[in-house]
Amino acid sequence: MKPSLLVLIPLKDASRAGVEAAFDVVYAPDATQRAAAIAAHGETIRAVLTNGTTGLTAAEIDRMPQLELVSALGAGYENLAIDHARSRGIVLVNGAGTNDHCVADHAFALLLAVVRDVPQLDQGTREGVWRDTLPLRPSVSGKRLGIVGLGNIGEKIARRGAGFEMEIGYHNRKPREGSSLRYFDSVRGLAQWCDFLVVATPGGAGTRHLIGAEVLEALGSGGFVVNVSRGSVVDTAALAQALAAGAIAGAGLDVYEGEPHPPEALLTLRNVVLTPHVGGRSPEAIAASVDNFLANAKRHFAGEAVLTPI
Image (cartoon, rainbow, N blue to C red; front, side, top):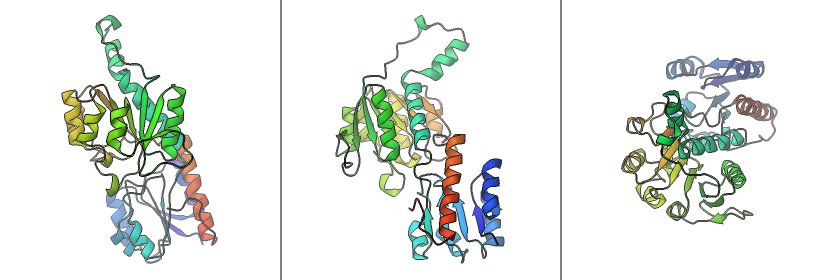
């Protein structure tokens, strides 16, 4: 008999078919279905597939007495009740490494779009505006790139920056062993040094509003910020104020507070580019994430160590 799996996130047909081949699936990708599914099937659920945004609460875990494996499909797991799950002996895994390239690609897409004013230029072209009436936009190559969070994604962003002949610095809680990149012991110091600040640090309480008014002030009127981490890392009110006042030049955001609804304060600003948390989503990345989950699950239910534990 296949183990029972509760799926709390939307899956495309191909991904769902792969999961259903290995599990007896209870599919509940929205809040209403979720509550009903846990009420009806909680007693038999042995595994849960979710993501960092959707999460899994301690109360929900308590309604699944046979639960032994929880997986976040992507790298993030900020809304999983980690400590509570561990107290129950539940194995926790994520999709670390499965969408790193996709997120790094998207970070640069946002950076190029906002620095070069691509959305506005596209709109102007469609309206018959020619270049002579438009302001000149900065180059990207040869500038200083600051990365907040030099993990796997941050490192891939740095490699892309090197391709643009950029000088690269970073901030972590401590220097990354083996890295030759310039280390800054504060985000403010990094922001003061760089032209472009790309945020790729994990979400959660420890990084909430890490990018606030003080950091944005340090970034300065010619600086740009890009966030591909979690919306909670950037103080939305401080960012909107800085953008509106010209205290920074622009922002590219794939994530923002209050998802899935973009902040109203940002929608009327022309110097911000917004995308709906798709940085880690591509056919290749989703397939890799699902394959990683299935590999972890197969190993777990065979009594073996999982590949990407949290």
